[in-house]
Length: 474
Image (cartoon, rainbow, N blue to C red):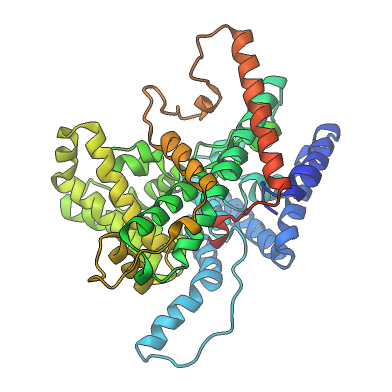
């Protein structure tokens, strides 16, 4: 079940909200509702989710009360979390590597990847480390902790909500009319990004990437990756915004996850804006503990390369994701070697264009079926077919509506409006550009825009339009 499905919008969510607001046992309602939400798509993995909750609750409880062996308990807890992730996500990948170098022979049985495992494993690790550092108190109630681990708004695709960010709201939260309205507006805005923009360009991206790159000319190849570039931003960004909106409606303040990443004028700036909860997780729990930039240039470059190698691997057990991560790590190293100073001397639009070029090249590896496919696609983009390619009639694959969504999405994504950056609490989502207008006029405009977007989304979903979800792969 995804937020943009009719089942969620018209059946599950209204019934859940009614029970959540009417019944006094809000944590229990949220836990049961979240388990039903997860069971809709993966019923056999509900015990795994609860095992993860029990594991991290128990180890965190022991770490908080131990006087000795605290580090050993932390290592045990992190090891068990990584073992769970490694078995389900990476066992087949590494077995394939061993097969390729002749150290083993034979294929493993197919292992189904549980939904959201990358997200809830990272949640558990951050909780244990924060308890170990005494940044937070261990949760004494398993019900409350299980509710945190399973809460459905952020379970499948983030943002990665650390326990420390919502600990006070796990214990006690209030939901006023203003917050409910804010949450609803954010949800509709995210739904519109997903349904009206991401879904519309997705079909064109999928069709072009399904063509043999040798049959694509440069214009068709660039159009395909442009569609995917807009799709992945508004698919994942829209889903994150819907999660943040639902969080507000339930009384939780989830961290912002995207901040106009395509307006960035450097790769360093891009990673301050893209998937913020993941990049900050790697910064706080891996990059800084490794020494960050405090141990000299060589160690800094190694730390960056390692972090982005693991960031790529986190996204998927495939060489395409590894190359994507190393590509971004290499670009960050180049910026530290002087590239950032060079970009700073260029006009802002030039730095933004360079950043977008680098990001789009990376997205080719992220989207391609395998490395040979990615290399051939890059060859089509940069005219590397030695005259063998012919002009594919890509207009048959990308219709007028997709081109319009691509244009609108590109404008919204790349326009760097002064003062548009989000504060740390993400409250800027709620601020309209005309915040100095009279309050009644501003509220009326927000209500009209929200209602219009909601109606357009409902009409699109009712028409049975293409509705994929990229981050199910992770």
